[in-house]
Amino acid sequence: MTQRCVPPSVRPTVFLILMLMPAVGGAFLVNCSEPNQPALLDALRPIFNLSSIRPVMNMTTCTNISTHFTMYGILGVEEKAQLLITYLWLTSWWMNEHVSWDPIQCGTDSISLPRNLFWTPDIVINEFMDENTAPFVPYVYLFSNGRVHDAQPVRVVSSCNLDIYTFPFDIQNCSMTFNSYIHYARDIKIFPGRDGDEITTFSKEVMTTMGEWELLDITSHKYVPDVSDDYIDELIFHVRVRRRATLYVVNLLIPSCFLITVDLFSFLLPPQNVDRSLFKMTLILGYTVFLLIMNDLLPTTGDTIPLINVFLCLCLSLMVASLLETIIITNLLCGSLGYSPVPRWIRVVVLSILGRMVRLPPKPADPEDTVIQNPAAQEVKVFSLAAADGEVSQQKGPLDEDKARKELRSIGRDLLAIRLQVKEQLGKSQSSEEWIQVGFIIDRLLFCFYVLFISVSFITIIIIWIKSTNIS
View 1: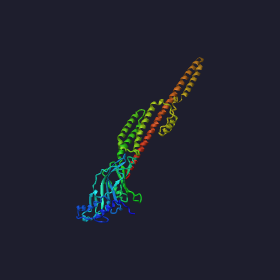
View 2: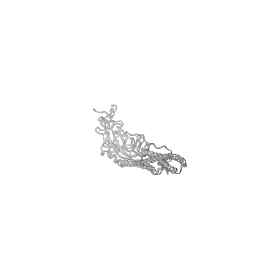
View 3: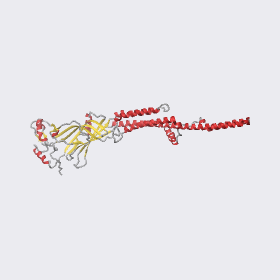
View 4: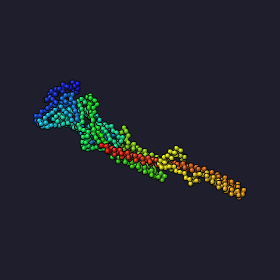
């Protein structure tokens, strides 16, 4: 079945114009009176009247558009608006079946003419999001075989689904879809004018500005949904760009690692002699000011949270946790005498388990300190000595017996009071030492966590950086 591309009301006008043309066939042969451009231009004037229609002799014939571009510059990427801004040299070719001439007779095989004198395809980029502010090119080239060459610069502000989870080591893959805005595939089909490798190689050679972005490659593929012609033909180019991470590593990651390392070494300060909390508060204040200054370097988007934001938040959280832990230790060193005894679960979990993990086990009892360790035994010893003295006094006479008993009773009461006081002091001292030991164990545990976090962060950053650099 023959497909009809022109409405019936337009067909008589088209046929009338075709009847007035100087020749009939695959293309109209233009005859030049002289081999120069003015004569060729004069001979082409009847062709200019056909600029409103698609340049084919048979309206069922499809016009094949060959197109490609050269990326001259990557002007920037807007993470918040999800935009890729590039500067392209766009080139297109198609055949105009209404015209042809003899290069020898007309003196040239090509001529540049105003764009408005010829039919041009309505090729657009689907992802276009802003006005093209590139300079307008008013001319196209027409060749003797009817081939039309169109080239123009385009400033493309295209939408792109940016994934900044691995910022600043991210690689973005953006698409540019070329298609006719109104013509179906039965009228216009688009084909790549160059291979993707050629486009990539030539773009890298001529590219003058990339900013923080580096072009990796450009590939293309055709969109063919089915055998039907009731669709708009599309040619899709995929542009893959990589962010240069050196600026962010030097200005964000390395200073953060340095500051967290300084906070790590602050654990070496003795909390009982030095005001460690004042040093940590100063460090937190400096890090907060640093993050406010460098806030403009961080991406702003609501889709995903970049890993670098998580890393910076963890650094600040560790500094705050370190300050809180220092406050707890200082409080235990100064006021633990007034605390209640350490609960059993803290004694088991912290003193026994965590203490052995961080090489700070509970201190063993001192067997030489018999006065403090066992005052009751000391009291029995005193009573035995007093009994011996009593036996000696019985030998002296019955008159001293009552006096000796009174002295022994007085000594017993004094020893009982001393025992109770020593027991109370012993309990407070032991509880205070246990609380201080809990503080030192937490301090050592946080120190180990600091070392682990810094080591893993450094290794991860280096691996991701090297991996993203080696991708080509």
